[in-house]
Image 1 (tube, rainbow, N blue to C red):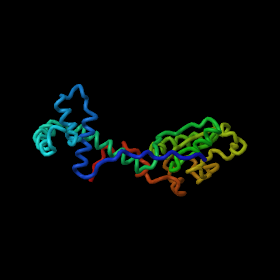
Image 2 (image 1 turned 45 degrees about the horizontal axis):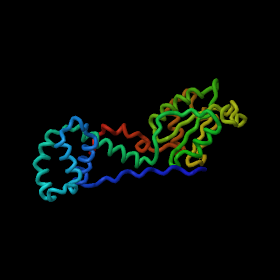
Image 3 (image 1 turned 30 degrees about the vertical axis):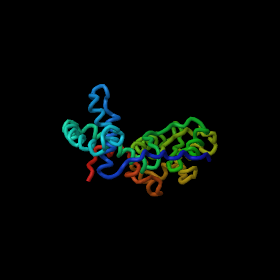
Image 4 (image 1 turned 180 degrees about the vertical axis):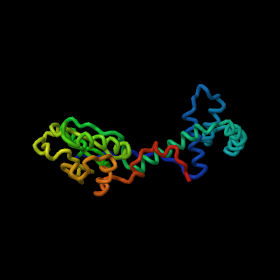
Length: 237
């Protein structure tokens, strides 16, 4: 199996009240529309994000000068930029803690090579669920619909589907074992369910498939699987 991509290291962010204010000022400076902001205000922002860069004034004078003008700027500042900055920080933190990429949809695999690639080359911490189906087989369409719903709820899980004839091993996936559901992580087969509809009610829904997979411990906790945008407007206690 080929090497898994490493998680990119997040930019260093200062901690503590002063560090947060410093980072917010820097973010504000970088996100401002330069054409709509007076040059003196841009310079003030630049000094506040890095007061040591001033060569003409001592640090004490710069801080004193900023303390007067900073109050006026804070009074003028709406909360839009601050909310944007907080959302960006929360998203970066969530992505760092979620250990991997996000997907949100069911991927159609069109060949046996694509099937092997998604098993062997996906991030080592990513759970991969593959539905092997065929047209006209009872339960296949329903399971496809269920996986579409689950993909939206478990965005850290990579849900895929592939026709049995496209796998290159059609003899192993004859009509009597479909629909089949295979679960992988780091190239290892964790779940191998042939004729999965035999384990479900005659009429089943996404919740039934979710409960079935949870019985085998094959889905992450929803708190870790949810995308960052779901928590964007959540209140922080």
